Image 1 (cartoon, one colour):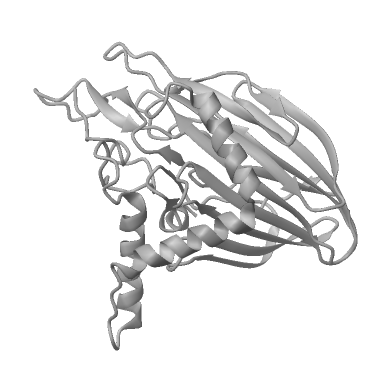
Image 2 (cartoon, rainbow, N blue to C red; image 1 turned 90 degrees about the vertical axis):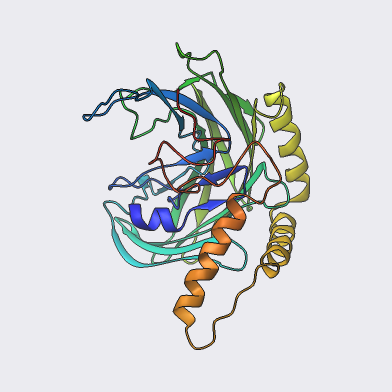
Length: 339
């Protein structure tokens, strides 16, 4: 899973996510969200220390998990880490950078088809969008979606298992909510980053909105569906992110961006994203006659490079691993800082 999560990573230059599942997955994996230019000094820890090594390394830190959607079918949580998977297909489009997945899992009350489509907008780089669907195949079922935002995250490669965020209480709205966090204090530098993520959830009808839940750095919304056999329940989850790297009003900025995205809607956001991606990719199109696998590999790398950094922000660059993971101290910070 870690391998596939890496090669299926998505980015738009402002933020990036690994190819994680939206729903719970309890088997081995690396949950990862990374925000361009948001980093923190991590005290160096190596077994081969030499004179001249820095006391701190600048590290891009795992940020708010904004893709999360828990899924309950007749009270049983969908979790491909423990349930039998009957079929599975996932695809990262080399034309649009849209990630699609279709999976059928076997629950105690029958098979359930899970479908997801998500993208990080190349038009409005602070926006992420997910369309998520669940369909009972064998019997009717109660399906509950719990989309959430969670700032209680950590880096798996933190040298001293340190949590880099101080999350604040989540806030509810009618159709979602927001979370806010600040990087922890550090003895080396007074620099701290503020991050806010806000979500708006639109469900297909008929749905019953059950409850909100908030906690420290956490907010969720629950929607309940009574699905007949073969009937699909669907939600669109739109997310906006803002950081203090770009504004002093991160909460207000995230809310403004989310309002604009919600007024546009998932379908129009997707169309605009795909059109711009097609135009950008046309500028670096490469064709290799007689070697489709080599052409696919080059197109994949061009897509990742193009999405990671296109030169719009002189404070950023192309990091050693793009937005695909945590090694080498992270990825797209302005420079690979050593102290």
